[in-house]
Length: 186
Image (cartoon, rainbow, N blue to C red; front, side, top):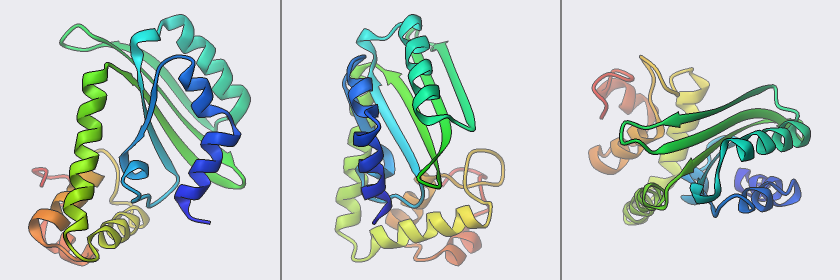
């Protein structure tokens, strides 16, 4: 079973997508949407027109009861533009495997931009034979080496996409030779 097939099972069988749909329209984005999952990580943007701090608390209860996370965070933020954004992140063991969930509650415009980015990456990767597989492999290897994530000295997925699609990088060694991780984003 592929990582995406496992993700589909989790999204459906746990009722997560259904529960999120009670708050706003969920959009599974990122590597799931692009079919480039390199590990158990789900990024879901939810239209926040129906979100409130009370619903954040209710969703927190659902996530804790359903997934029994090893790590959990929930917060409400006000952006520099004055918009309210909510976030919930969790790591939980499901069927013996650790899964990460990032739930962001955004306005429709922000979600459309994220989906457009994913669609652009997919379209560009489709034009380069083997690009999708190379991007997945590089992300997996960077993660195994502790060089993936946010922070100094680390790469993020967007770095990998740019390196493969714009710079012609074909493997992790080529990426490491060309770039110092996390410095002057690609």
